[in-house]
Length: 529
Ligand code: NAD
Ligand code: MLT
Image: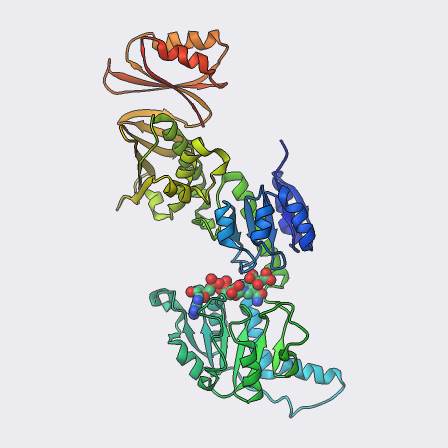
């Protein structure tokens, strides 16, 4: 079978490409730069796409991407990906956010030094063989007030470094509870206080309606005179025209900008005109270390997704924290198999599903397990159309009610999944767990079982009388179907017994009908997982 094609359409460090190749899973097409025409031409065959900021994954591209399953942004910002459109098409979107935080924080600190000591200006002057000592007198950072807007990954790294420089740090982030920020040991203040009291302001937020124009022409007068502004996050958080005006009017002492509303910055921009505005071409993440990290992170996420169906750092699917990956991956497969199993065991479409998690894994984020189970269930009816991104949406459209809960105070017990499903007439309940050799259904309708829910299974419900298994074995043998395993589950002796036979091959329909007609059979079903 042909391997899935992975396209890397922007420049990526070779370490990432090597990880993809070494996995042996993919046909990798690495193009350091891809024009829109090339991208549109190749995308119909691509199953996994890795991009940086140059390639745009918009509606028009997604419509052409018939096989696309995953888009990974090697970096943080996903402003070049239409996530709602990807979700509708069932395409998982992930980013690689951790690898470039330190480098970007360092870029912000470097900007702060460059602004305080006018380093680029002094360098430019000396390159013209001048010696302008008084012109470039700067200011010290120690004791100055730094306002940090956005206290996520990068903002926090900036805070740590600024404190090391003995600056007074003010922070603003309305989306992080204050108790989660106490270890930073900074003053959390309203945004207006940041604007009024800071000698330097640095922003580390995404560009949103709330952050666009955080400094604008109307609030320039709020700023502390001489303030220096730093933006290594996204262009537009400070209004570009306001920066130019503020610098011209002497309100803003300088600005260090790494990102712009339009990139590359158009030649007509007034930002070029002022010496006190220091510009770098979106270099925050451009260090050897950050590029290696994001490339590795992206490639590992691609491999994990194609290998285990696990999405790390996904933006449209409950994400699995990489540190929980090893613990959760076998549960993920088990839940998908169990979803498929119960869907095939029940005679009518399911109406309600109750999932209860017990034991030590309740300490982890288990939301992805519900989705894996839903996917397994819906795939029976909908085939490849269902994936982890659209499964919850499709379940809702089918009025399937799913309720998950974690049992309280069970964190010291072994992990176990308890599932009860209802169709309009029946109810089925099972327990499942992950053992040393993989996932197992350990109990069915209150009776013990030891079934691996995988491959071809013949399920038989029969009256518990001697000789049933022998008769079945003979019938299957006559049709040249080999039995690979057998699991029994029954309550009281002589009552109803359930038998699961693992088969090497699929079960011919006619043979299933023959088995169903046997007087010792109550029910027979072929289950394929
Ligand atoms: P993050 O998600 O870890 O942190 C962003 C923080 O901003 C969050 O804590 C969030 O609560 C906060 N926030 C959101 N809206 C806010 C608002 N209105 N006011 C105050 N805080 C708000 O992201 P990160 O990894 O720290 O990245 C921050 C930014 O830096 C992103 O825009 C990212 O794209 C950009 N970035 C730029 C470069 C570069 O090369 N210049 C490199 C990496 C990241
Ligand atoms: C990011 O969002 O990660 C940055 O803008 C860095 C980049 O990819 O250039």
